[in-house]
Image (cartoon, rainbow, N blue to C red; front, side, top):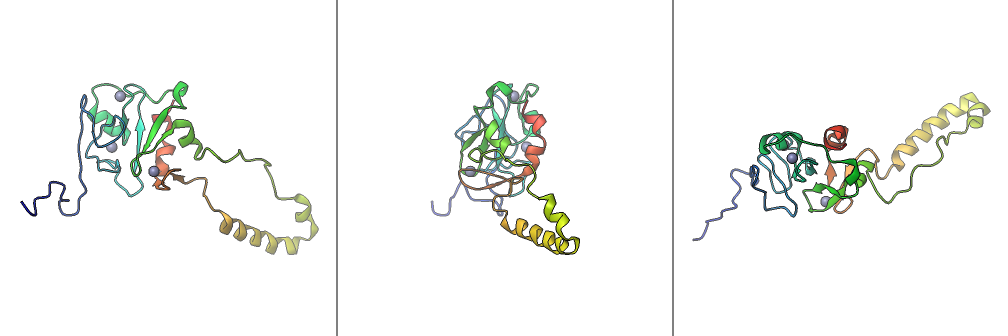
Amino acid sequence: MDGADPDRPDGGTPQRRTTREPALDDRFGVPLRGVAVDPETRCAHWDSDRDVVALRFGCCGTFSPCHACHAETADHDPDPWPRARFDDPAVLCGVCGTTLSARAYLDGDTGAPPVSGSERGSPSRDRASPGDSRTQSGDDEAHRAAGSRAKPDDDTCPACGAAFNPGCRRHRDRYFE
Ligand SMILES: [Zn+2]
Ligand SMILES: [Zn+2]
Ligand SMILES: [Zn+2]
């Protein structure tokens, strides 16, 4: 019996599974269906190292790695996740299995206070001396770039830090009401 490994990756391909309604993919802690889903919720359509998010649909309350997965594995038309349930779990991190609420996912982070103070550049400094301010503003920009710790445009899992594909959030109107 040695060498018999049912989970053996086939030429380096991770384990893929397609699940169609009404079945559910039992590898995950949430109801989930998709096409060629790997253990971190990548799918046949979205397969980069960042495509590790599954999104929940309002129609059936099931998670799918993407819109196309829902279309191919469900027998019904999709509904976006309803606004009334934005505090319920609606986003799954395929890496660690944590679920996020739609609100937490769409806001990018939950803990940080809202940005206050719209403009920090003081106009007076601009006026001080045009020659100097040019080099200074260049310096400022470099400083600001270097100082950016958690890029707000980047989606990451708050639990494990896995990078999410920012493209998912760009299609937010498909997934969220
Ligand atoms: Zn559905
Ligand atoms: Zn898909
Ligand atoms: Zn995670």
